[in-house]
Each structure stands twice: as C-alpha cells, then as structure tokens.
Image (cartoon, rainbow, N blue to C red):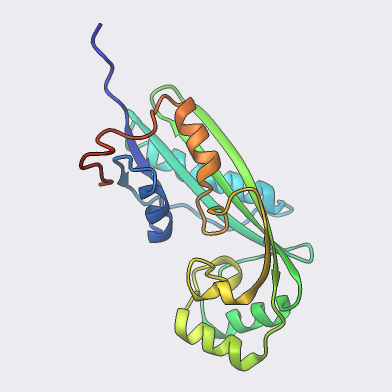
Length: 208
C-alpha cells in the first residue's frame, strides 16, 4: 500500500518568536498571516478570547489551504480581572508596567490545530502565572527603549530582555509564555497524524 503524503503544515502567525519555537520541532512548515479582528467581545473572559482568536486565525488560513494542517495561537494577558492588551506605544507600555509591578499577571496562551482536510479542530488554553518585579520607573523605561515590546500583551517580552521584569513564572510549559505552547502542540500534531521527529531529522532536516 502506498503511504499517504503528509499534509502541509502552516503556522497562522506573523510572529518570528512563534516561528522560531515551531522550528524546534524540525518539521517543514510555511507561514500564512491571518487578517482578523482581535478585539475582545463584550463580556468575554480572557480564556474565551484567547481560544476564539486562536481558532479564528487557524480557520482563516485554512480557507486558503484546504489540504493543510494549520496552527493558530493567541495570547491574552489578564490583571486584576481585566484584559491587558498590546500597548502600541511607549506611554501605554509604561502605564501597564507601572500597574503590574510587584503583582501577579496571568497569560492565556491559546493554541488551535485545525485539520483542513476533515474540519477537525483541537484547542487548549495554557495559563502562565507571572509575578512582576517591583522595579523603578527608570529601569522600566530603559527596558522599553531597549526592547520596544509594543506589540506584546502586557509589554513583557520574556523571550528577550523582558525576562528581567519577572520574579517568578508558574506553568506546565516553558514555551507557553513566549506564545506557542510546544508541549500541547506536539500532542495535537501527533493526534493529527504528523509524526515526530520530522522527515530528515538526523540528516539535513530544517523548517521552511
């Protein structure tokens, strides 16, 4: 019997950090950036927002690639019962970091693996609890000028210099805070029939 070809694997994200995380799995993949409205719905919890957006990103890309397996992901930060979005500029980021210093913030890193061949979807919200250090304004400002994390929820780019802002990190997946929970992802990919390690590992394996 002839083996069925593996489906194309597509990352529905423009984030270079998610791309770098996915490259760890040594699977061939491509990137297609979805265009969706990421505004939270009225009354929506951070858990629901992150899962909905991860699904919508995957499904938006799946519409263009009906034979592929799509990975969608979204991250929402929540602090004292409210969602903390992407700051967009220095002033908003300073306000966020001042409010959060010395306190605990939850990051909801949602993941969706959508199999466009059969419409099957897997999704999970991986929660990370982070305590921020109580740092003075001049240190926060120096961090922001150095890292410019204005497209990061909560202004904390933990994959870079932002790690200095954090006193403790509590979760079950060290990659979740960066934005793509690889522990959950590997489980989902194997359920979708994608074997790990990928083809060519141990030879010239690389990600496209």
